[in-house]
Image 1: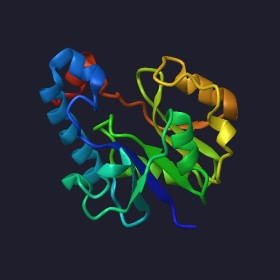
Image 2: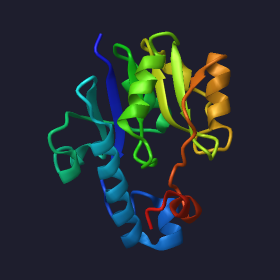
Image 3: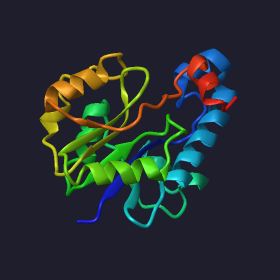
Image 4: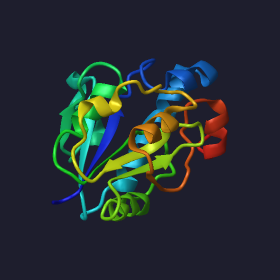
Length: 188
């Protein structure tokens, strides 16, 4: 089957995206940074070797964001990250999902993830904050896979590892969630 990359994307609505970063730098600048990161990521990960689909929130924003033009879009389900991930992993495999917080991700990272999935059932791209910037699975995953995970926590990836046992991992990248991470990313 043809691999699919889902990008979880929020519409760049003032005060609704990058809220932790906005607390450090203000909502106007946070929105500008978010648009730049999101656009960079979308541009840098598309490749003819896989399908790229945007999972969009809020659903009313589908088709309204210039950076999303030309890409298939699906609405994200409501709720925490658990049902949102369950949604993208309930179809065929191989599937990978990323967010819009890690501007260092490249199409080579995505290609490596899909290559790993040829011999491993799951793959993660660890984030330096204890979470992950990519999750991939060779086959559909049951929704309960995402139960009892501490999201946005220093133990998020550890919680996921506990669900799967041994997992394959890619390089560690930095999620840009606050001013310290923004400075590390050199996007300022």
